[in-house]
Image (cartoon, rainbow, N blue to C red; front, side):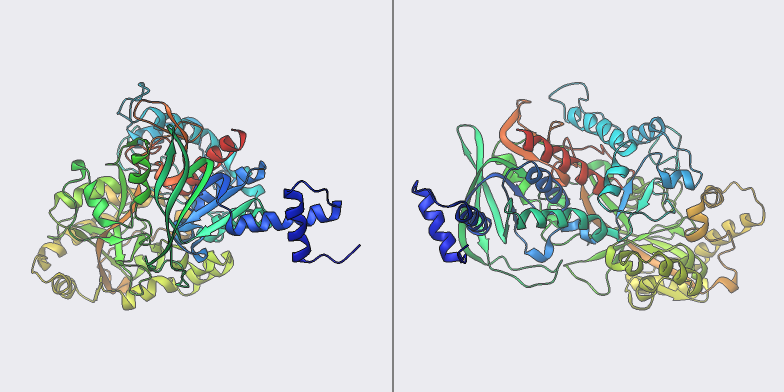
Length: 596
């Protein structure tokens, strides 16, 4: 057989295109070159996917696996493949899982449904095809079935594994039919966020090598191309190449234009959490007035641009006022993106005070009800609140959200993670914030602690005597195994869960007991994170128009679609459902497009 060169293959491709018969081995070579050229410079495909985050990777893999060619676009560079999911802790929501049963947790689809709907509070036209919650509620039911039956087994088959201790997020603190998880359901992925991204990125790169997926990095979509009422492509600007590290804000310098065409366009571009102006613009009255000062929990490229762009092409945006922000944010002492904040994932023992030093009532208890707590903070008149704790609590209970804040788990080293907690007490990443973070005050006495809190915010709002009275009141309740203090009841309740008792809950003790000092106060900032509303989609992932019918050629998945249907979570989340929502909605849309 003669030696094959790229030049020979190109010539064969040209002859084939002209209708000239060529030998079989040359046809194979020509096809490979044509495929490679399409990956690098092709302007048409079967499908265009806008956004290379988790939902985009999942969908692109499903579409390519069914034999269709995909162009995967993003305004960021290759180093950001996987999007926000890379930075996550990697929590996933399962129902009646192997891990739950090993921890003697009794869960069921009926209990999960009760918790989901008690948290979601769907109320906007659930039974009307034009209602904002019509498709959202249908997605919720489909997702619950997925989380109960197929989700864990399918992800395990892709190579994912989980920490054997199940976390209890969003514990509610109200009645059984109210918001929150009745049982622990937060399954932490070994490898954290990168461990969730890894199997899908690997498969997408395999499809790229096989000529089924082409990457278009640094392609910013500015509009959808619509012809005859059908979305047929995208157009926008090519941005200057970047070598900036993942997460760092990149240049928006334009180096050219582009237009790409396809039979189907799938939008998986994420939410608005990196754009504080859009967050304030959509802030709901039910959460009080929008904060003047916030920290940002996602990179700057999570800017929400594609929501309005898709709406201009006929897509319907619903539930834009539903969003998910955390109240335990700290300014990152070593920031990666602008206004970078890190969330404390707290255990149940820290005191929680408003800006005037008044202890919050239920559900103002760490880990209970994020949106109710956000509402309480805004009603207090402040953009911030305070945790007050001691050394024993920070050592046993504090974990920070984010893959970069959990090196052992990100490296899939469970033994090192547990050993660090047992030997050193405080996790190294938490200690770094304690030593360097601007939101921390450490003192040996309540008086010195109050003085430091006042100095930090530049006002004399915290009265040391009042602070001491509230702490001593709870301390007196510790002596008995029973109590009227709801927070102490919760501490004892959570200790019944194996995961909490091992790594997340300090034994009940008096905060002012000197052997557990020093005292610590942490100023908590409101941290932007997720859009709960977005583009309304049917169960196939087709974007709906204002008339209640799908917009031809237009699809959406992930956060830009409210994680399914324009708001699968309703008004609030049970946690572990954001990554799962990206995976499920991306898979469903990808499979539907592959069949179309």
